[in-house]
Amino acid sequence: MTPVAIITGASAGIGAELARVFAKHGHALVLVARREPQLRALAAEIVAGGGPPPLVLPIDLGQSDAVARIQEALAANGLEPQYVVNNAGFGLVGDAVDRKRDELLEMIDLNMRALTDLSLAFVDSLARHRGGILNVASVASFLPGPGSAVYYASKAYVLSFSEALHQELRPRGVRVTTLCPGPVLTEFQQRAGVESRKMPLLDVSALRVAEQGYRGLMRGKRLVIPGFVNKLITLLPRVMPRDLMLSLIDRRQRARMASPAKRT
Image (cartoon, rainbow, N blue to C red; front, side):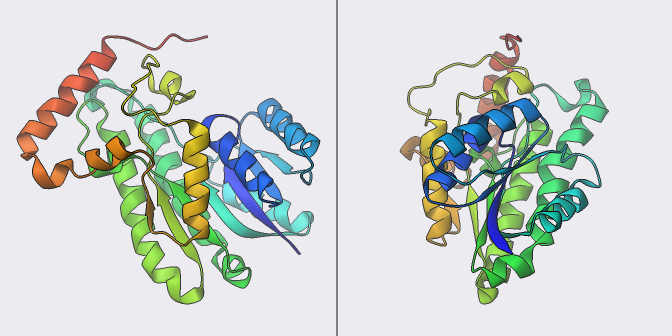
């Protein structure tokens, strides 16, 4: 069985950059996302760069049978996971009561349930290959999120779950790293419903985020937060009164809501 790295949400943004970084370091890949054309374009790029042809799986991870379908595809192709990278996810901006509940539940299903399922599905294989899990959370994991309450809460779950899993799986030789980027200019903002804006003190490129996440995973780090200012933001809950922090985040989110994303 050939060891592979599974990359979810690989069709764009941080996920695509993670795939490129893993490929550059010689890993065979399984690319998972809903959009097949983007996955195939990325696979062709990796092959053109000298990497082995990735297995492309156009699967919606929000579906309850998604992990079973991935397992079947791996078995059919003689592949076995060495690394699982849970990057798929999305956010929504707006008061929770004003959003459609179906949208919020879809976000919970992808950001939390699918990530949990994939994190636990291949542990025996990861242990055999001395591999690991990279779960993509956010600096939002450390903060309350009025104006994006369910998204922030879902990322808080990813951080808590992944840090605990880091400790639980260490005796089995499986590394678990949580990657917590700040704002990154990707398609994420369009899905969230806000305008993409550069934030010079906070912005870290998707490539830099991917490179730091990869290095952190290989070194067995528990937590990776790209960018000095982003690291400082994660310390706010320790030093800032909770009411003041809630007010500041609420104000920022309402400013974002006032400038809706331009959709193409």
